[in-house]
Length: 219
Image (cartoon, rainbow, N blue to C red; front, side, top):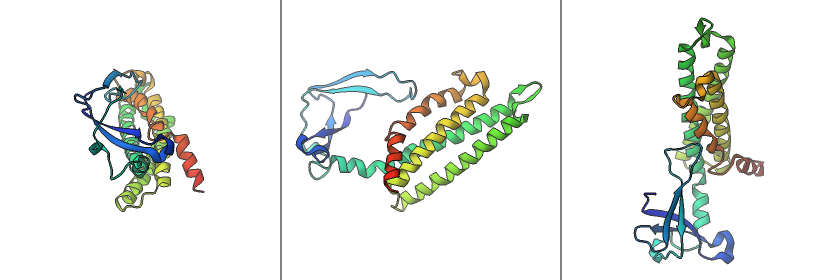
């Protein structure tokens, strides 16, 4: 709703398919034919606006083309996909570690039948499993970051990181909410927001099903 610069993936030559797409910067202030629609009502990520944007015969100068020539939009997008998926992995591992820390703190303080919830063997076993998986996730993510810094993060590894970390994120947050009991379903507890926000991670940046197809094609 506030952006005055919007990058649009436009078909500059529809007959060429993907090779006929280009990235174009639209300066929205005073742009004739540009309209903002409503903010979409999402179940999570409430702090991030997702808005409808309408382009009705909007004209922009050729200087607003990103890149040296037309038709490079698809290539430009594909070149950045590993970095985008690595960023989604960063969001996943950050939430994984935060959810686990909050849950450990909660089960230490919350009492049931006269003792802390952490004293129950089921709680200990579950947290031991989650801590192990979170540690594996952190090691994998750090390795991907090192590869990216060295210029060697390939699309397949980035796809594995995206799908594995976000699957773990959703499952771990669900388990942590369960350990909160009924309070985990209350908005006043951060784990409830994490539960809502985590779900979209398996959708954007390429669905996890698409990630698995990309991985399978490399075998």
